[in-house]
Length: 105
Image (cartoon, rainbow, N blue to C red; front, side, top):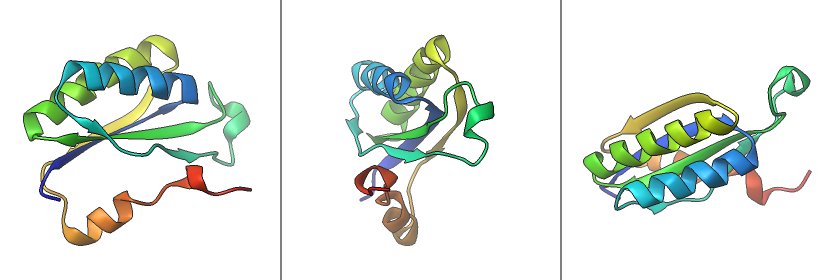
């Protein structure tokens, strides 16, 4: 705890891996578990899976990682949104641990 978190929500798992790689190479950050969401309107999306990647580190490093990840994801499928939380509150930290990737359908 005490580290900034940067979240990038994008289309597709391949783009998520490429964006995560770019972000980790751009800054001194650690990568947290991916999260996924298949929305009801999945067929209308460029890729029917939304993935969130999360970086941890100093605010400066997280900003650089998110910027690199967004740039890379936009080259592949596109970004929905990105956000940086400089110091997540304890209850927010609990929510950041939730992931849909560890659940089976």
